[in-house]
Length: 312
Image (cartoon, rainbow, N blue to C red):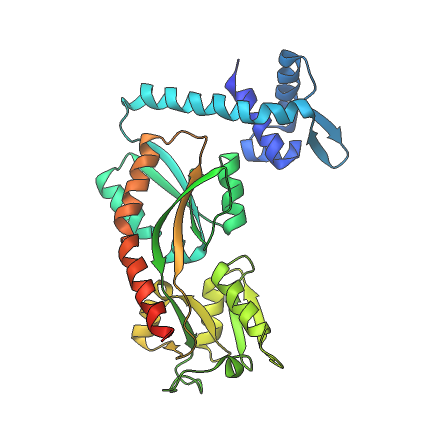
């Protein structure tokens, strides 16, 4: 069997559209149609129902998806063994939120270029749900999730570190010089520029602000951390961001930390698909990520001590 047909099948299954699949695979739509018909002929059954707005998997098509993934996974193992004698080589795509792509992962890429130049790392800024979907479809090899919990049974996850958060304002904002912590009641009177919905720490802050009785917090959500940071630096309001993304701005005096409620550090979790083989190249990336991030146990002790102190 030509495994290219299976790859085309899985792309159509994921996109739900022959045209979108053709664009992604850099093929003519007619080629995609011919390949799917060839696969249906070989299996002797219809795999998709052709609908006016796309293609929907039939029952047979749904049964084929996990088996097709297994075949392509086995093919990847064979190619890796034949091409490199098991040495790490190839392209690994890592999905992560903008926070990590901007502040943490460039260091990982630079270290891998020095130690394993045959391993190419592609970074894709994605939110949690898009990262999970990318792992399931094979578009992503690995993902970093900033989440307290990862209730996805088909994914294997491990804790890498914790990212401290900091509440921010402009240096000339009225809250910048406060010595006493700002209360939730005071914060609920401010304007906030937060990362897009689906960002766990931004969503948690938004819920807390909206829960304040008679609060009048004004919330603006951005798909870009840089946009939120720029609005705050211009004196338009406050934001909550991982300290790693604003360390330089704080040191240069372009932003100021606001004394206020304690925000729990955000867990950084490495995720991959349980059923997919971890290639030598992917394993190399995993090991470099482990070296790059702080030891989780030390962060856990620090977080526990912080929570213990704030509860006294």
